[in-house]
Image (tube, rainbow, N blue to C red):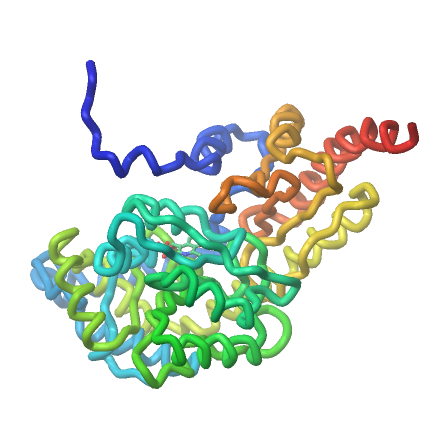
Length: 401
Ligand SMILES: Cc1ncc(COP(=O)(O)O)c(C=O)c1O
């Protein structure tokens, strides 16, 4: 049958991660592939109590339709959390969304026409690329170095490409774990303000800092209403709640609310109330502190295991928070091929290719350290190192010829 899908679907790339995740269900596989939080840290008891309290004290409201902007008391909680991070806002400035993935689509819907340009980091979060690609845009990547995006490169790109917005993940970036310095955030905002460039700041990991000093979001500098700030409870409470939020100017928020109405009317009333009860009745800050500590330990264990076992020529990032590190392999290594070998040794990672708008990035891999126990990390890195040793052995022979 000749099924006539929309033209836009031809631009959308399938994700290797989703394919990989299908095999991670096998019990003896050690996976550094998914972007999953540690399930043993989910506040299951507290959520269970919150859920019961919500239904007992306000059941019908929790099961009823609600406003598209979100449940007012939860908007207040998210405004308070945003203020704690340095963003000057009130509950009025918040739009509650279904995860922070949903606003990637909603923002695309209100800004992007076919043929438009979006500026991104390279590599960047692949599901954001998928969200933007659906709107038939083209990507132009902003040069980066060890400190992330280079703001000085922006003026020329803005003048030449006239992008609709810049998409950036400034804190503990997915996939590299890198963080944009405070100086670069200021410089970036200064340039955005000069050119009226919209900045889509995606911040799912900023609260997960386990080392170094906090750096305020770019949104904290925003006096012109140019920055659209996204965050989520997925990494600090649980992703199954599917709750995120946007802080944006009134003009942008109104448009986002209209397209959200068309997409899903509103985010689950029940989930919003459960999260609100959890955040007001329990010590959520102490919970996030436990997550930070645990992820910091897991990073250190992975870093030490990599140092002990990987062949020379492999380097990796040392993030101060978040859930990922990024490995650079020697020239000539193809991590898609490496992954097939790793699969035989029952260890998984994500090859770099999917994170690059132009599908380059053959010699990179992303390792997640939040979803494996310390024992699994040591064992899995050992297996991965064996695969890497085997991959570089022929390259060393070639080099010696
Ligand atoms: C950079 C980035 N943005 C957005 C999301 C979406 O998260 P959620 O929809 O669960 O809030 C993720 C999830 O891993 C992510 O890594």
